[in-house]
Length: 414
Image 1: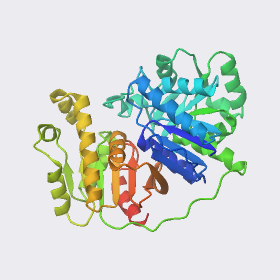
Image 2 (image 1 turned 120 degrees about the horizontal axis):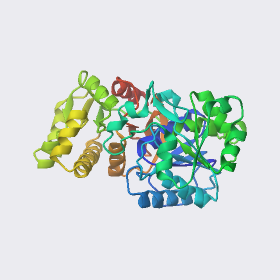
Image 3 (image 1 turned 135 degrees about the vertical axis):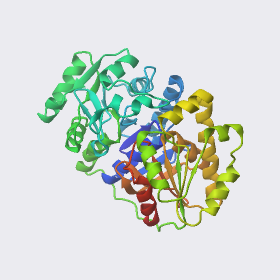
């Protein structure tokens, strides 16, 4: 194994797998820590955890266990993958996990590279932009679990860490001075280095500068540069063969409440049957699994969408009426139960929107390994389970307005 990856959620792991596969690396995605230590026949392995919003100690514990497993597989370099919008809070979990990994690996430095230009995530002067607006103005300031109110990643990290935070400016990177600039930051006592990145060429350049570093952290974009190092060294194996496509109608499950998810759900509902999961009905017991299954059966053979997605006013109403954590847990569990029922009823193509929802669905289905299939949108591939089931896991903010419509078409051929 060349690259061992620890992802803090399932959609992020899927995104990363897509990037590595496109870069030519044969990649295996695993849901949670594997139970066995059988050798993997792959260039890159990704362990998808669900540690983005759990207590810090638990995030650290799971991440260190994943690191131990990957090192046991012979991973030459470790990538800690988090969201390209740097989803975190002052309590963590990005820095605490990073520093725990640094300690276990015995390294005194690492980088923070959330940029993913293909999806509009860029870092300039240490500030994170989503498309053409700052992080704290793109809708992430309203995230129910990890509201991002500061676009300066140096300040965000400093609020979590006892170490000082450094910066690799774009000018140094594009002057081919990345190695020298990062060494200077470490020498100055700033070993946590936020890297400016505007395009894929910048990611390749940073990747070259990180050759030999034991730990890299960031979004899936930096995997382009890391994979290029291994490819240039002639270490990458051949890609796996394709499987025959599955048949049958696709079902979309959307639990994200991001701005883009709201647009995507509205677009989909104009083109296919839709069923809204109303929080009050779910919490009171007035809505049960059978009602949704009846809707799906009655909706015919075409695609259909089941969603709990709501806008900001809907979120505020839900928060006022119910304990937020309990409501989120109930919705996630419902989607997991629904996914299990869908597969039991013979559905072989499922699209899931939202990181928390994706994690619940994958756990409910008991799927622990995937091959990476074709790309639907930047960062969003089709995943192929060992039994052939096709599933797509999409982060809430990823994809264009017509994502669900196109996902269904790609799944028909995957």
